[in-house]
Image (cartoon, rainbow, N blue to C red):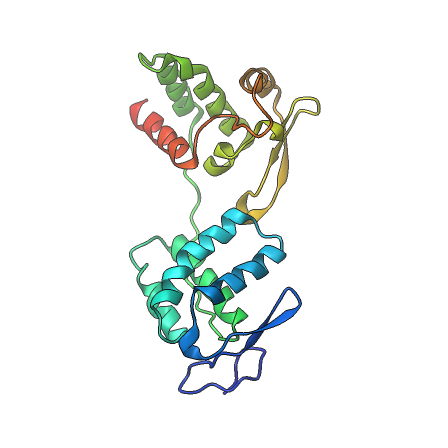
Length: 238
């Protein structure tokens, strides 16, 4: 039996170490006992050369590092065992982890193609009346009154653009083009950039929000987790 695209012979179902191409240079990886975080770094370097975002690469490393540090022999079976540790998580998350494992193992010539079935569901629909309740609740806040305008603009931007929470949190001042009335989303879903026409209702509010800030400053000044918590708290309180 041979390895994926390599013709390397397998022993007891485990691929021996071999050499891989990194940036046009062939790197010898040694024996199977020598799988370490160094080999993971070589794989991540190859992803960097392909132009993947640093945030995406960091997530891959965060998941795979415990795998390479605790696994004696990398194989489809050991990858499946590692993936089983996430059995309590949602199918979307497990499918993403399976993709991380597949990319790394295939890079090393080890075939792994486990698929996690993700149920097809429609996102929950939010009625306009429900958004109106949230707007009223934000306006009536007794504390943190200085953030009321920011929060109203944040909610309206989410409503008018359909941007995801992480995209809103990562939006920089330089991504809001008031001259061309465009919003640039960097590294969105699938690590893709896209351009969104700015709705007329957003121009005044966003103009006020970015005034006096540096280009690299966050428009809303919130991290993804904090922003997500805000939306959840609004929905529960309104």
